[in-house]
Image (tube, rainbow, N blue to C red):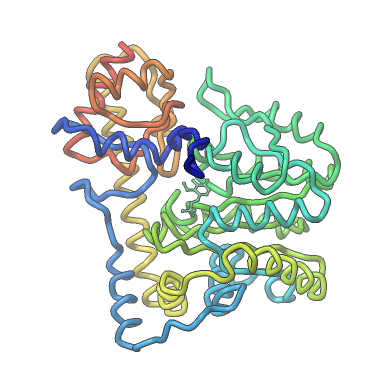
Length: 399
Ligand code: PMP
């Protein structure tokens, strides 16, 4: 018999699987609002002009294809850390931040999860709900995934007092994953004052805050503002860890550009942490790919290109924001009896619509609109051409 006869069919991925179903659908009306990948208003993938320019420059330089180090390109890592912590960050100045280049956000989450498991962590806390992939990433890293309350479905808002209660009940030293900005899937972030309270409780309980920063610059259009929580926690004295993705803000999805960093108490501790991150990377994928990191380095090393990046990233954030207003207005214009205020109060790539699983299935089967079963709609896939169609369909299944 075949070596593979006992392999049963695994279920499709709840998010990526939507692309497969969408591709098979031959309706001319079909809409893909599943995966969080930015589309321009014509519905096509978008390459930032500043990225195109950087690519041309890199090719013109005739670079070689030698291996990167295990921790990746140090120039890239330094620029990535400045991007998230800020140029004036004391921890960076004091050389007590360990950083490595990773296979985008996903790869950084996995490397850090494995490293935590090696050093005695048995569990990690993630918000409920959270990005679906967090759960298998940390489970496969050897951690038990526990949830803390985050969102109140009835009011479509942050469940803040329960979040704080759940933090107070966490065993001392626990790692708590926080979305740095543009919480996925809810689009609902703590306010500055709420972040301060979260920081205070984390200090009280000696928790380890681990920030997942997948949308810096993409959430508000202002990269500094989107990093405010990370920066506040470092200033408040937390020795945090941060994973950064350059998929959305730089539109480099398939290039797998990311960074993982750990703030330590002093430089020697940072070097020891760095050595352990490398121990996890080497037998996993050995070293990260070069091209995407070179693009980000070219841009962030040059103030003029960085300004262009900021403008172009802001352009994406603005288009999405515009679509939030149009979608809400269209739903209200159709006479929907529900409130759609949350569509415009949420930020980032997604609208956490509040649609039930049955309504999502109806949206797919009746209207060929593909979003995740939790009702998360990728606003990046909404365009001037399809917004009215989407609104009518949502109205039809919720009306
Ligand atoms: N974290 C969050 C919260 C995300 O939304 C995503 C992308 N959907 C990621 C991490 C990872 O994406 P990537 O691996 O492309 O960086």
